Amino acid sequence: MTNDLRISRVWPVAGGDLTTTAGLYRSNQKFISEIGFATFFQDVVGGGQAVPLDLVTAAGALVTDGGYRNFGGPGAAGNIRDNAVTYQTTAPFASVNFAKGKIAIGASVRWDNSRARGNAMNDSGVRTFDMNGNGVISAPERQVSFVPVGVTQPVRYSHDYLSYSVSVNYRIAEPFAMFARYSLGGRAAADKILFTSAISPTTGALLNPAAGDDSVRQAEIGLKYRKDGLVLNLTGFHAKTDDTNSQILTNPATGQLELLSVTRGYEAYGLEFEGGFRRGPFSITAHATYTEAEIKSAENPALVGNIPRNQPKLLFGLTPQFDTDLFTVGANIIGVTDSFSQDVNQLRMPGYTTVGLFAQVRPMERLELSINANNVLNERAITGISEGAIPASGVVMARPLFGRSISASARFFF
Image 1 (tube, rainbow, N blue to C red):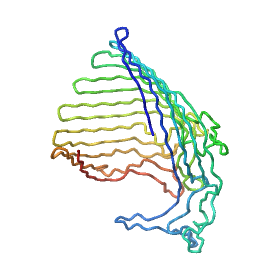
Image 2: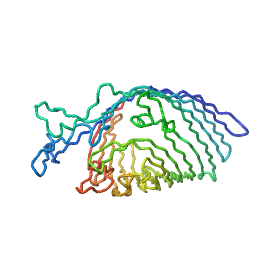
Image 3: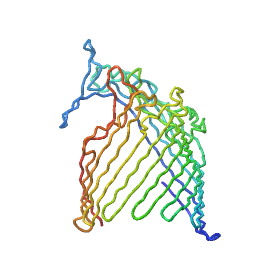
Image 4: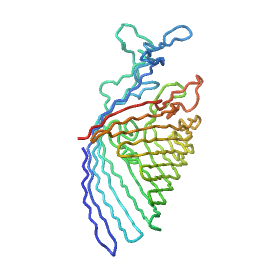
């Protein structure tokens, strides 16, 4: 349930307009989650013919059972995580903006009060269990994660934090303006700090208040240009971010996937470009972001100074489009440069560019037919790798985007 109540009024002041807004945001969300893992092997065959693979040692002993290497928690215990927690947020907010002539000045503030009530539990180890009930215990059935009775951990805490923003916009000429903004933004850590030392496992209290929210401090300065169908925005930014989260990665010692709780501080600066042009039925929009980022603090001091994982220096996109009353056709081009797979900065993932095409036809009133083609060039686009370096096997676990896919739809408007 979410409620956002606000009142606003424009006041004539000193030849300008003073806009004031005040309001109250309130939400109530029940978050239920079950996270689990199982290591499973199968071949890759098209046409729905893929089957599980059983692996054997050099001596011929089975290490899998119907394709399963283990059931539940790969590596160490603690990877099976269940929780049912209700988060309630109450946040009064206010803003004021004054505009006169070529200048506009604004400020806003919000105070978030969050309350968490519920329970969480995770596995404490592995045991032997006959998963398929055949009376024979296989090697994987000796690695079955379980949650003992009576190990539920309470979640019971309240936390508050402040967010604010101040900005100024100056119109140099009719189509051209510059602006500056400084802001402190917060976001409740919520489920990200479950199963971490930030919450007491016995009382559910928040032991580390600093972990109750993640903050972003950001300074921006930029230029805006709008004339004759042309829109250009260029923004320089500098940001400092705190983040408490969980990462999925491969333990280099065991080769197994694990959930790792991390508490990090990041710093980044860069440039962001957004632009668009429209002339008659033709339009084109583009965006690009250049970022230099660094890990400033971490639970592992060896990571300080490294580049955050999955952080490309350049991300860009381009969308040309042609519109008429009868039809719309266009393309989406999205690209990123290379980035590191993990925070240890030893393995790089290659950059990629994908191309998508779309078309919409409106043959009659209230009917629209659409066709979309994603990754039409079948680009091998790797978005994540669980390993931080190439293991002895030479094989890593990668997460790619889908290859070429085509979908069609029909929409009726009533």
